[in-house]
Length: 351
Image (cartoon, rainbow, N blue to C red; front, side, top):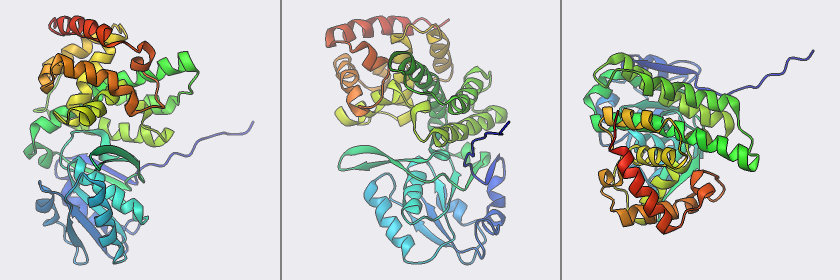
């Protein structure tokens, strides 16, 4: 009988712990990544420059990324192309990492991801979220060759951003339910390995009794965000981590302007979509978001009822090829308004 297997691309190195940054110089001198330490270090406006100062590599060049836009990523790529680098090291939050990933991919340079916050699953994903001409787009990029998360730096970063990563995990649960709905209704194929990677970490985080003051919880959250990125890489799509929850967040950005952190917006979107599905896990997700003091209502994001109804109505247009509970129900504005009123009442009841 033939042995059939799937080859899955993953980072060569993943390090999540306190003091992980101390080993960054040794990692970058690894023959698999850099033969002589010729690396480009890309830092953002946060803690990136402080970490870069600790890297003992004489041949390293430091670049500061404006971050977050396609133009900034292309400009950075052109600077990287001016010299032959063994690797690009992105140090910072999501915008800096996404800029570095895109720039490195443009010229086929391996990228090392050093995350200073846990705001979303872009830490190790094959996707860069970048703004261009007022529109936030998703761009396919190569998977980081290594991922480093130092809990000491996460501790000193913005705790609101780290807390938002928990909402990102809630969105996995909703996105997977949307994917299963697409299989039932449209016969869309579902990748079981991608589902497993996206679900296991999310469920572990959401069920963990700890919080951001607990090293075990923070480590688990970081690892779950990393496996979410791998889930996307496995199936070549953001499908296991992005459903109606992300459609709602993208619609907020496009129609009324970003009102909160990306993960905070997808957390509200995930809870609302779970309610629309009449999913029995709604109470559980509502309780988890409440315990971690995360937004649950449109008002928590600074959205009025009219704005949220408009946002949800627009949401399917942000991902025309994706089938979620929003496309399935295709609710009219009046029906959405009615469901939203019921949702607000239900959210207020936390067991």
